[in-house]
View 1 (cartoon, rainbow, N blue to C red):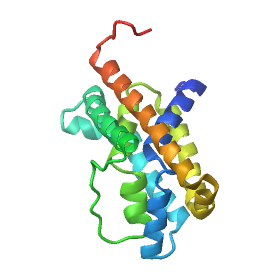
View 2: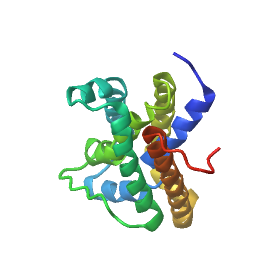
View 3: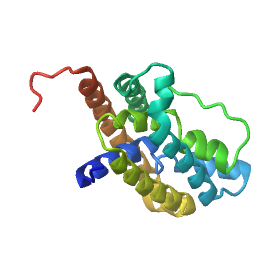
View 4: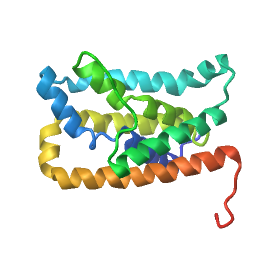
Length: 194
């Protein structure tokens, strides 16, 4: 176990971008208007359980299917790239057809702990120590809880323009992360890389 502030910060930023809780505020407000009040603690705990399960037993689970983490990271880089494209271009590539509503479905899953964020956790395990990812996840879940608790206030504070800027900014970061994950796990070295 090796604690690294750099790895914690890097993993935190990756997860913050992929979870994109500020960008989800309009969706959360819409769900809340349709399904009634959302329970922030219940949603946060449910998403955390999903994340921690994949963090600690995701690799053995992949082993059952004969897939190594590097291969999964390469596949994950494609998903992260597409999510980044969604955010930057404002298009919908992934469709979420979820019946029911409320705090667990669709808020905790698939909105917070969706395929992209689960894939990201398994992908960054190829680069970062588990303890550092764990700490980054805990910090992200604290932010998720706070945002869910203060959704209306955050929306008023950032405004539509602020939310759009955040979404575009983190979309570009995700695209760069996807390229780096792909290059790292394939062994390709760019001629001008330092």
